[in-house]
Image (cartoon, rainbow, N blue to C red; front, side, top):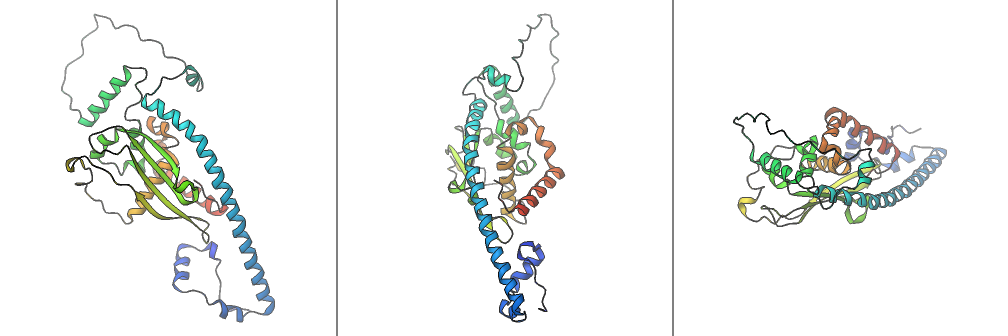
Length: 308
């Protein structure tokens, strides 16, 4: 019998993995300590593991194909959402009845002898004032859209809001849509976000992109982050460059922070934006969200699949 204790490479913990990486096992020495019968069984088990990897690879290929098919269907729904958010068209009765709503009754005319409003002093943030003005303007038109929809939705996400500064808010009011896709059209290569902006005073780009590159780790049975790639922003002037005087916060791992935001956007905010806009999804932040994410990752790792 061999004198060494061998650890399953798939079931290694973080500390075990680091120890294994620092000192590789000499398989020749290990095999020489085995009997012929034991070596035959080890070879057979290695063959089974190879077949397991092949089955898991076919499963991932089928999941990737299904992810692309569902993404195409979802894109049709998100295109309608964009039209509604931007006010490109009116809402139909069918869309209202789909969720069991009916047209709101018209408000009665205000009485002429109504008491005048009390005067007072109120301090309003310039960004909030601009947002409120946009809401009032939109309310005056049936096709006015929903101003600051995406800014509000992202602000209600704990992960995303932590990265938004006060200087960013005015620029993000021009964000009209967030489109999610895959890197090179392949779900296993990572997620690609496209941020659409209306004309603004900050930059000339109509769209900004962010890519989160991943590759599949066969040993651990889950995707591994390899890179985060952004695009160049064409600022209209140095004074409008929002990155010049941004105070850098200390982060143990900048890429991990960006991936946390990317995961929140791709998995939660973009597909369920209306819940984040209304604030209904706020209950999923904090401890509940972390526990939910940990549970999902454990299930993914156990099944050997990629959730995208």
